Structures are given as C-alpha cells and as structure tokens.
Amino acid sequence: MRRIAVPDFHGKPQNYIAELDVTTEELESLWGPRDISMDDLGPWFTFAFSLDSGFLAALVREVENAPTPGYILTVIGQKELQGILEDFLTESGFAPDRVLRRGFE
Image (tube, rainbow, N blue to C red):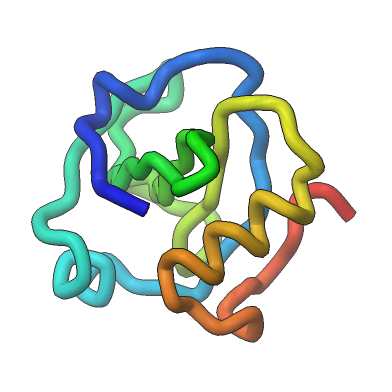
C-alpha cells in the first residue's frame, strides 16, 4: 500500500466500506500530513492510498461537524467489499477491532 495524492483518488464506483477507530494524529504519525479534499458537503481530511491489489482507498473525515469519531474508509473500484476491507486492514496494519461499523452489512 502506498500513499497517493488526493487528485489521484478518482473513478467510479466509490463505495463506503467502513468506519475505523483512528485519529488524525495517529494517521499523520504513520503517513504524514493530512490532505484536504472537497465535495458538496465541504472540506474533508483525507489520506488516500493505492492498495497492492490496484484498488484506490481513502480514509476521510469531515473537517467540521463530523457526525462520528474516527474515519470513513472508502474505495474506488469493483470487488467484493469484504475483501477490500480485509486487504486494507492487512496492508495498513490496523487490527480488525478498529472497525467501528461496516458499510456493506
């Protein structure tokens, strides 16, 4: 897994995979400064990656008024969603108990 620039995180479909119990400080200690991405809801803290499988993944959190703690894992591409979550957890080193909620259940 390697970190990519936010503009390189694009494509269809974009799937919500899970919410993870991680903090901005923890992510920055692992992968460097957060990026900011924008959509219709406003700015998002963003850490984007290319997984070893070639799928694109990002951990995102609303900058203002985030509704829950932690980060949302979203991916671009078509694959069995459980498999992508497992790939991300393995490649990132995060334990499965860091998953607060799965988006595909």
